[in-house]
Length: 306
Image (cartoon, rainbow, N blue to C red; front, side, top):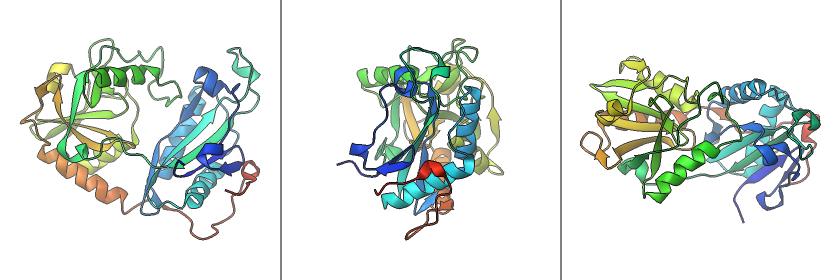
C-alpha cells in the first residue's frame, strides 16, 4: 500500500482508491497544471508562493480553478494533516476537468482539483556524492510554442530527456534550447559556478523555479549572481554545477557526458548552499494543523473519511 493520502474534488481517500474520470482532459491531453511542494518537520515550505505560481500557471492556459486560493490552501494543509506525515511531498493538480474525446476545452465544464500527499526520494546518497549527466538530444521547445513558466501536465519533452539519461546510464539530462543555450535539467533548474560567481539561465527557456529563487536569496551577500544565457561549453568549463528543484532539492552534478566538472567532486559553493538550503527548509514554513485541525473553508472539501 502506498504511503499518504489523496484529495480529489471534495473527498479524501487512500492512494489506491483515489479516482478521476478517464474523460478528464488532464489525462487525455495533459490539459492542466501542477506543483511540487515539500514539507519538513511539520511545516510546508513556501506554501503561498507555490499556490501563487500554480494559479498563475492556470491563468496562462485559461483554466479557472474550482477553488479559491484560500480554499486551496486549507485543502492542502488538511491533506497534510490527514496523512500523518511530518516530512513529505505534495503534488497538487488542477485539470481542465471531465469533457469529451475532442480537444475543445469548453467541453470540460468544471476543473478538477487533486492533492496527492506522499513521499519522494529522487537521488538518495547522490545528493552528497554527486550526479552524472548527459546532454539530451531532445531540445526544450521555444517559448512561442510552450511557455516554460507554465508548469503543465504535459511533461513528455522532459520525460524523453530523462529516458535518454536512463538509456545511457546517467542520473540526469542537461537540456538545451533550439539556439544551443543551456536551459535546465530534465526537471530541475541548473546553476554553474565560476570564480565563486554563481550563474543560472534566464527564465525565458526554463521554469521560474521556487527552489531556484531560494538559492538566489541564499547567495545574497555571499556570492555574486548572474542570470544570463550561456552555451554548453561555458557549463562544461565551470568549477561547479548543481541542480535545484522541489523534488530534487539541491544536488551537485559532477560530470556531463563523461567530462568531469571541476575536480569531479561536489564543490565548496554547492556544498555550502546545499547545507544552508536544508537548514532553511527544515526550520521555516507554514505549520500543518495538529489534532482535528481547523475547518476546511470550502464547499469543494465536503470530506469523506480518510
